[in-house]
Length: 231
Image (cartoon, rainbow, N blue to C red; front, side, top):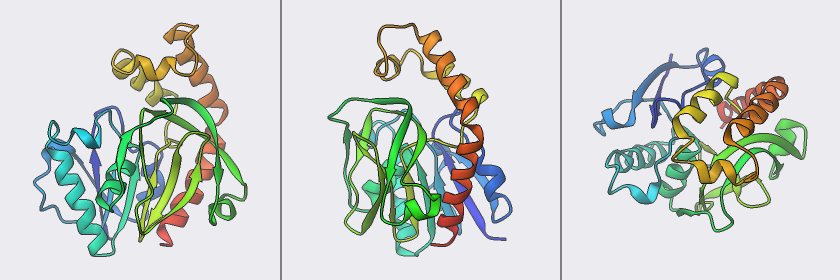
């Protein structure tokens, strides 16, 4: 079975439901980003999210190693899956740019528009996703936009790589871990959806909505993985 290298950029941002959808196709090896040497062997590459920024690569030296691994995968025409920060790293590695979003953060359940064939994969022109970010990316020169929100690009492909800014792999337990880890450092992002209520109330609202959308998230993620495996 082919080897999938998964790079984890923060302890609370995990594979989630990606794992059950991918383990039948790959032998999965997960490494923390700060363990990378740059010479890792893989047949496919996946980079998960985190609070770091691509433009902070001087501060987080391992981001440069992640960029180079993506470039290696692109040269060798291997599959890449980038989630949140991973999608930003993939864009940068492929010739795009990553900046702090000029329209402010996105947080919570948001409906995104699907284009350029992804609407046929999902069988809908839109879908609900969970967003928690302040940075955004451009579509790289050889890339194709597949989905967008009212503020930013959300999903794209480049060669055999798929970059997703959003999260539909999460459940209530993981969201609870994110709030515990990020509630202070990301308070501006969390309050961007509603600055008139307490973070605990916002968390409970999100947990309830994630529970309601669990089956929809799983169905759409399954379809997206099938699409990725066809690239």
